[in-house]
Length: 157
Image (cartoon, rainbow, N blue to C red; front, side):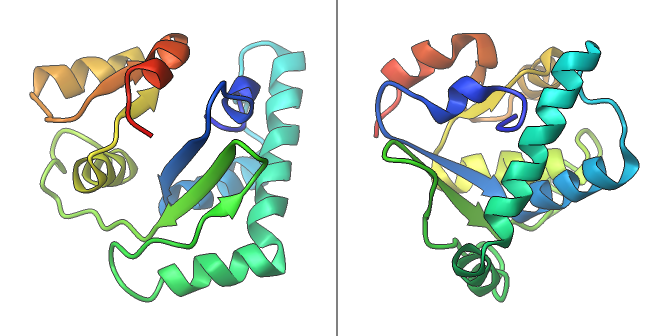
């Protein structure tokens, strides 16, 4: 979502995004397969450019070192990767415990478990995913990307 929604990098207050390491692997998959991310060709090209920028950010030696330190132990967090004065990213070495494995794919499960462990809200643009979370009574706050500003106003720093 960070690659698709540029406004996530310019919030009105400081934000710390927590993402499982497995989501970084998906960026590489997007790059390799060349699959379309967005329906509109211009939007798709723009999103793919941001995917490349994120990969570049994660591959910078100092950031890579922070990420690699977190990968040795399950659920360990990286030191914050500073994006700008208001945005940082923490990479979490999440593990799929199969707690939600029959209903959600492994990455979705890692995101759920990360939110639960860190008591953090989940931000998504996938309505079907939100519906499944609600239907299965997953105990995490969920915000649609359209409600990003509202989420910022109603979550603690």
